[in-house]
Length: 614
Ligand SMILES: Cc1cc2nc3c(=O)[nH]c(=O)nc-3n(C[C@H](O)[C@H](O)[C@H](O)COP(=O)(O)OP(=O)(O)OC[C@H]3O[C@@H](n4cnc5c(N)ncnc54)[C@H](O)[C@@H]3O)c2cc1C
Image: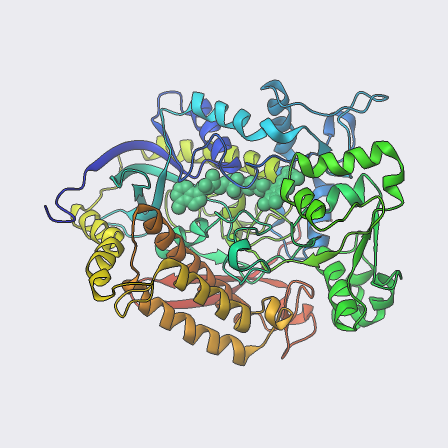
């Protein structure tokens, strides 16, 4: 039996196909059913929606809640907040759209059974900070998954989507997607009238601080493999702000989040000599970014910048002062529970390193960079905005539709709308779904056609790494290094190393320049050439091979964007050594890219930033 001949193909037809069943994907699936009562709604997920995605391990806070019912914040306030944090550059129409809808999503979570913490005096949700409310988050993901399961016509778990399909007569119209079952190896062909991509962000494109056996421990979910970017990039969708990677200050070695510590326990940081250091770097930072340093709250990247400068000046490590707060037994309990319920690895690291935060101030570190669209960063696809508020050049039809017809996105996938977090991603999934249903209904009988030839070619491409391994394995008697194939782990390490060294990772203290980036792009091209020689031992490795392909395409996009923006807009996230200052005169704009899969070339352009909120 030949390799390809015996493989089962499963054909699935859908009106709406949701790729990725994390926060945005469950929101999109739920809302698709609300507006599309008679439509066939299919959700496809590479893990299992019950526990998949970045929130799967449980959270202690919902980080985006306005509290409009109590007059706590208005959507305009959130736009101002995100704009300030991103040094002026956000899509205000998209951010406003999420902010005005997010509260109702949070109310749904509570209705569906999510345990919310309440302030015993006011009866309102317990605030952790201005935007965050506290929850018991362990059940968060199963609860939204249940809503999606009940709404979907079908949910396909364990299917890794590898490619989008386009209309055979109109290449800029989406027609579905293909992938494979990571357990059975069946080939899946989804034909769909509209596709909503909700496949999360990208970790492991830069070398992580945790290496060797610890390399799976990154801050952003290690399974976030950049599919949200690679899938649309390959079919020509424009990306925005892909240079705006995020670096986070986190507890050392476990990447435990610091938000609850700063906001709820009121802890603070100091250098290795017990001194306050942030204020010392104010004038230095002002020389780079002007009065952005005076903005309140201090933008996340600029706080990182002070941290990095202090360590580079030889006064590390930076520590979180927990010894004062932890004298209060209530705060001590909250501090431990925060990690036991959310980042248990941090509690284990502390226990294993003899760190009791009641007596020892734990070290912080800055993470390797990640690419995502939902945190204090806004990389992702360039999407059409809401028709009632989007300026004309941000609106080309349906809300959250990319520059490819019928292709929508939400959550980490969509660029320009930072600080949406879990709740905002779910709300954005709902927004995208409503528009996608409208799109499907208005298209009526005008349906995309799938080319059988394209499907068969993709099948061959997708499973080729198994064949490469099967044949090449005979050339070696032991070990993992073969003259004819590259294993996914080898490719991943090569990618991470070159992104680290050339595109501004931890190895260069986040520094890069035009020469480094140009060389990095040459090396990325060579890696791309070698990708046809990837060998996969089994289906698990086949998934790793395709995750690597997606990470590589996302990385190329990051490198091109970083080269294009000739300024250092976000010191603390990365530095362009040849353009160390923020340059509002020339670069108060978005950067957009478009990849041409026929030529392998990237086209870059600027797009204006419209400020629609005062
Ligand atoms: C450590 C950490 C802490 C956080 N803390 C908070 C917090 O306290 N509060 C808060 O509100 N938010 C928090 N967030 C942010 C929140 O998790 C994200 O904003 C949110 O999950 C983004 O939603 P998404 O749907 O875009 O991505 P995800 O929820 O990650 O979902 C993406 C889904 O796509 C699937 N997928 C990926 N590729 C493919 C493919 N090729 N084929 C099929 N399926 C695929 C994945 O398996 C996953 O299920 C945190 C995130 C992290 C990593």
